[in-house]
Length: 258
Image (cartoon, rainbow, N blue to C red; front, side, top):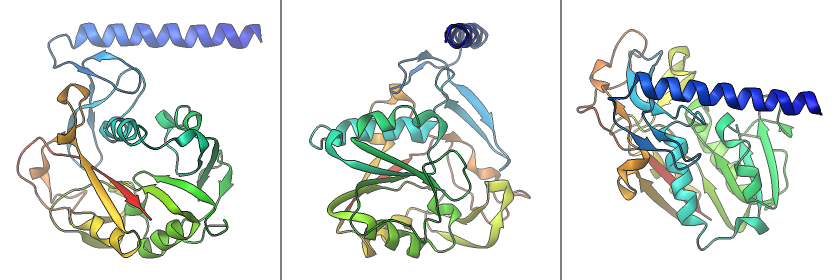
């Protein structure tokens, strides 16, 4: 136990030293506040396999990306009138920076994924091994862009939700119109499509209301916009991605009501 405690202290000390070093080296960069961990300062730029660079994307302390911070703000607003402490959550493909915080919000928490080993249930989202109406809430962040049978996945998510259930199912929005790929693109983390602003229309086949929250709904201080030059597409890594004007793009979080 003592070794574990000391190791924990060592890791936290090393992290804070790394944070301090990054803040000093990037003193002139814009500063933001992370709504997840409370960090204030410059965020890290990321060079992606898609051939683009996303500026101010990653919180240096908790590792959150734009989508995680926007989800946090959406949850803060949603949970003012919805009490998750009495609810059962299915969290599909849980991401590292959410795995410690999200379970604490709900009464019961079930993690699931097809490939990940460290989840409660290994399963296919298009064939969920759960009873009808078993969950109050489903969270699957940046999952459906990997699923060819996304209509089947949406049907399964709807099936396992209770009559008053909620699903939060964001995907990366990368243009006006959705483009289906002939095969998964490894340079896009095996995406099978390029979701456009019309993608969430598909959800209305399964949910009565889909409320869309965007980066514009909250303060810029939290860095919830995507700063990316998308005119680099199409390119060799992403031959089917469309170009998009501008270098500041909104992210969108859909909250789906049964």
